[in-house]
Image (cartoon, rainbow, N blue to C red):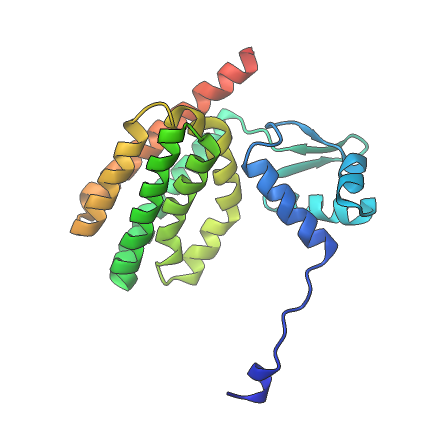
Length: 227
């Protein structure tokens, strides 16, 4: 082992990075509602830090699309409209099937194991009616294709919207998915098609799955607006 590796240490994370990580989790897990104002002063007090790292964290999350910073008004959790949702879902329909195909070529066994693990977690979450746990497992399943695809450019492209996709999943579809079996069954069929190497069927089902997700998102947004 070289000296450079033997004595390498991890640099401590900045306060802003730590705050951003915790806020990212809170938004994805639904601790803040879509469109909700994020109070800088209360957060700074809760974290035991000044407002400066909180503002830096919010700026980081704005770059990830999770937060909207409005000058002189404050910071808010992003609030998608139908056009945003349609664009994200079309992006997924184009990218995920190709990532899955590359993952099959690059690491079929590792990918299938990750998918199986996520599906088992989703099943447990459904039995407990735990929407947050279900949403996390659902996110793990879809991200597995990119983690194992072996293409850093495809991974970087997906990363631009991954956190927003995860948040939309928790806020808008997971509460219904733990009650109804349709989405869960589609994930199981995606795994079967992946294992069989049937990417014509996989792409067709993925488009059906994501289109259904889009419709679920839009219906949930309308229900929230009416409420």
